[in-house]
Image (cartoon, rainbow, N blue to C red; front, side, top):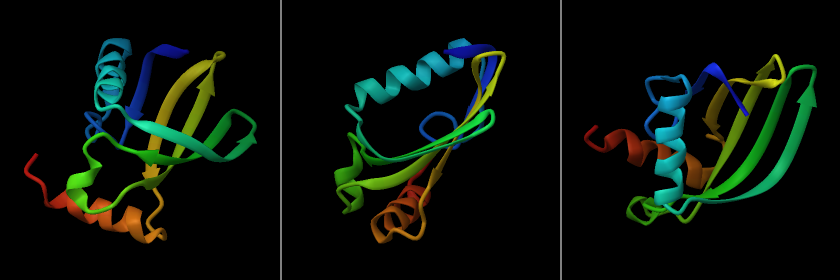
Length: 108
């Protein structure tokens, strides 16, 4: 689904963008190992861009004192494959905002 030089940015291992299939594979494997669970709560498509809004339960989230976050996954398509995937936490959601602040306070 991802192009050879695709990019995932802002999430998991990809706060500095993950570029290329090998880097993306590591991030996807990390998500599976963390037992991330998501529920789609909104979908939007315009031209070559799709936005999927999800309610996400992250495997290690209990340490942050929240039980879920809301994330918009923005996909840009080129040549029939994902070229760029950008993850954006919905800061207007109180739990997501709290998680973002907790995450930023953690040693990287």
